[in-house]
Image (cartoon, rainbow, N blue to C red; front, top):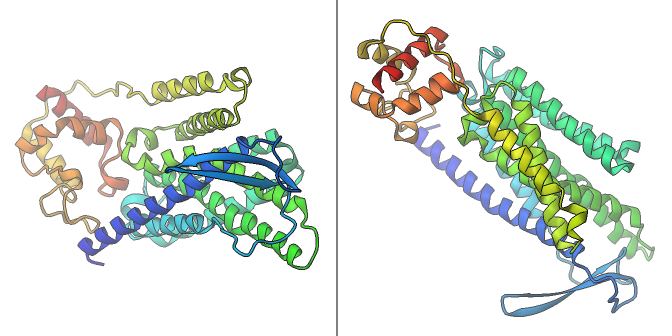
Length: 394
């Protein structure tokens, strides 16, 4: 595919992904907040669990939630499902155009595991399906009956998947797959559990039967999981812009801290909606803050030892840049994934190299995030030489 057309395809899918994801997240936050704000003392109709008065956009709304279902099925029933479905479809589309089409650059690191593109894609697809099956199995066993045990089990599942991803993919590829795995779990929760259970309850009502409460309870369990996973998965999806996250040698620890921070903040917001006493949930925010400080400390750039060998000349540095960087960072890149230099960083002459010296040091020497997937095989000696050259320019 032409690079220009591929970039437009990437942009349009990404734009659509953002739009539908905002809609999905918005409905998740709204209905969780609605559940927590119900006035259970006001029951205007038989079978009502609670009600909520709300005001928005100049209008007043009176919402009722039934303990199981109303006595009769309404003529018009509004569903909230397509936002979830389309979020996954567009997300997987992005995975295809960004990571599958350019697996050698973004997904594979031969220093980690020498995979072919087809092998990497096969592992990707199989892991997403396998991760869902394990998660779903946990929910359906006795483990799923214990909220704390299930939460710890899902937490462990994500961390194990993170470690395994770092053993087969590049750091960039591993991190995005953690987000893709969590996103898949969330979307299939809607497609495979929540909506089917709602349809079963409706079918029972049409048949003149009393709908079984357990279908709603299971759906609520999965919906709650989605709500608590939302904040962590959002950060996973933007992690590609921050190499200090995915290039960390213990990236599983970064993932663990992200999950803890996101889940605790989400819990605090939920408890605020429920108007709970601060003393019952106030502990969450200090712990989340401590986890955030820990994440900052862990990802702080270590002083990477650059040898004190002989000074590196401009010509020597330019030779290394020409060998490993100009495939992407030229005015007319030769790399098939780029039509223009990423972030408009051009390194074709010494003046430009000096201008972007700090970025060269951070990406190639400090984080080792470049070259992409180390496709050109930059050696440690070459990274060290670039570090000495940058330091010598200060």
